[in-house]
Each structure stands twice: as structure tokens, then as C-alpha cells.
Image (cartoon, rainbow, N blue to C red; front, side, top):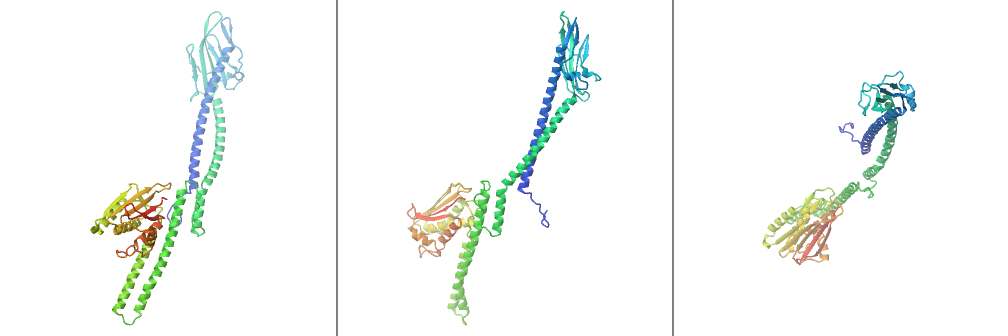
Amino acid sequence: MFPGTGKKRSASLRARYLFAGAVVLLVGLGATGIALERSYANGVERNIRDRLEGMVNQVLASIQEDQDELTVNAVLDSRLQQPESGYYSGLISTQYEWQSASSVGELKATVPELELGSEYYRSPGTEQRRYVYALSLGWETSSGMVIPITVWSSIDRWHFTQEVSGFRTDLWRWLLGVATILLLLQAIAGWLGMQPLQRVSRQIRAIEQGNRSSLDDDYPVELKPLTDNLNALLSSELAGQQRYRIALGNLAHGMKTPLAVLQSVMEKPNLHNQDKAQAQDAIVELHGVMRYQLERAASAARRTISEPLAISPLVDRLIGAMEKVYADQKLSITAQIDEDCYFYGEQRDFMELAGNLIDNACKYSNGKVEIKAQSIASETRRPGMLFKVDDNGPGVNHAEFEQLLQRGMRGDEKADGHGLGLAIVAEIADAYQARLKAAASNLGGLQVLVEFPGF
């Protein structure tokens, strides 16, 4: 907990990455170790049975016959000759019983009675400490007599335990060494993988300290959306600050003359009606200057984090309003808006831009206005948009259109308005880095096109 904040300290990405990686690594190596140990133990047990069968075969190979009597000579396996070797063997018949020298002083292996031709195998249990294998068969003597015999062999359990224990010790020692090396490599990989984020953090700190204005562009593809949006936000903030500084400067400049008029009027000893009218005009001009400059300052820069705004219902609202305003002109206003056409920004900005363009088209048309909007495919995260307004009015050339974008310029001095509409459109288009241009319309008048880029 941070002192006085009541908030938990968040674990770093590097610590989370290392912890998650360590858990996965240890669980994976642990499961691998258990599987290998189990597999090895099964292999050892199979090998023990093979040894038991081999000892039984050696005993069978050592049997000699003398006048229908069976005896066992020395077995070749030296372990059956050594006491306490843990390897035992024996033979049981109706006439003869034999045990290996290694069985001296040891308990006799218990073997159940077997049918001829059958075999028996037993692993150590809670009460037995030996692996036992037995084979029952009939030995035919030279005279044709068949003597039933059972040959058995056994191995102490500690042979199995010893082998598995030795393997287990070596296995887990090696796995521990491998885990240590892999954890070190993972730590190095985590350090290398976090370097781009560390660089982002350092550069943001430098931006906060005023030592740089944006992030680098050469970040990995996974971080590009983050760094691009951060750069766009920084650019938007700088543009907004610049726009407010300009607006405040223009506001101060625009208020000089009306304030000077008010001051000169107020200094007169006797105010006449003409003076009051002059003061009222100055106040009206002050209101106009403040409204225009505040409109310019509020016009947003390009939004990088905005919900997509469906423009079809907004255009329908504007068309409905224009049909009421210009009801006496009997206008024909049509709109073709793509379903997947969205504006990424403030609704107020779009309504201001589209409203001024449609209003101008209605004002100067000869009764017909067309509105079109379509989405522009883009390789960036958000598509662009093309917004067009056509009319069948007299139209203007390129030079005249550029003049109309200046504040206070009007295409027809007889028409109502203050000459601010296209200037505001230009301000909003510039804020969203959109391209604004005019062309000859297929309707015979003017086409104004605004192309919003994808980002």
C-alpha cells in the first residue's frame, strides 16, 4: 500500500511475466520428471521380470538326468552363488528339491501349486519383499518318464528401489539444473522483451520534463497502436494549446477597437442618443468577436479515441431542418449515405461542418441538393470518410472558393449571413486533418468535398 493512498501497488509486467513463466516452467518440468520417473520404474520392473525368466532358463539348462533322477549342477549366473546377493532360484519336483547357494539363510520363496505348462509372476506387496517368477512343466527322461517340476526365481525388492532411487536422484538433479538455466534465460528474455515498454516509459518521462514532444516511430508492431495513439493525443493536445493561444490572441486583437470606442464614448461628459447607439454597436461587435473566437477554439483537433458516430441520422436531422428553413423554395434534397459510414469525432463538429455546407448549398441552389457520404478503406485502424454536397446553383471557381474560406467573405452580399460558414468548415476540416476542396458538380453548380483520412 502507498502511504495515504489506500491503493494497492500493482505488480510490474516483468514480475508478472517471470512469475507466470516460472510457474509454467516448474509445473512442466515437474510433470515431465514424474512421467520420466514412472516410465523408468515401469521399465525397471519389466527388466526384472526378464531377469527372472533368464534365471529360470539357466536353471533348466543346468538340469542333469541320471537314471530318471534329476539334479542341478552349478548355475552360470554368479549372483546365484553369492549369499545376500538378492538373487535366488530353486527347483521343486516330486523326487528332488534344489535352491541356489544365495538362498542360504534366507526364507524360501513361496510358490503356489501350478498346473503343468503354466507360469506365475508376483510383484512385491505389503507383506512380500521379493519379485517371484515360476514355471511349471513336465521333464521327460530318456526312458520316457515325465517328471513334473517347478522352477522358480526371485529378486529382492531393494534392487528395484535402488535402481529407481538412483535414477530419481540423477533425474531431479538434472531437472533442477535445467530449470535454473531456463529461469535465467527467461529472465533475460523478459528483460529484453520489456525494453520497448521501458523505452516508452523513459520517453513519456522525457515528454513530461519537456525534453521531447513525441514518441519514436520504430516500436514493435504490438506496441504501434499504443505509441501511435499516444503521439496522436500529444499532437492533438499541442494543436489545441496552439489553437487556444491563437484564439486568445485574436480575441484580444479583435476587442481593441470596440473597447477603444466604448472608452471614448464613456469619457464624454454628456451622452447623446448617437453615442449610446455607437456604444451599443461596439457591444454587439464584442459579442460577435467573442462568439467567433470561442467557436474556433472549441473546434476539436483530430480525435484518436472516439466512438464511431453514425452520420445517417444526423444528416436526416439536418435535411429536415433545411426543408423547414427553405420551405418557400421547394427544395429537393436527397442523401446517399453508406451504412458503414462513420465519423470519428465530436457530434457537434460534424453537425457544424455538415450543417454549414448543406445550408450554403440550399441557399445558393436552384432547387436541387445532393448529399453523399461513403467510407474510405484504409490500412489504419479506422477508415476514412468522404462527405460531398452538390447543388445546381451558379457555382464558383477555385479562386473564389478559396476567398470564401476566409472569415467574413460572402458569395452573395444580398443573402443573409455573416460570411462565417465556410470559414468554420475550414477550421473543423483542418482540425481533423481533412482535405477540403471544391469542384464542378454534375448538377451544374458547386460540389464541396471533405475527405477525412483514416487513422
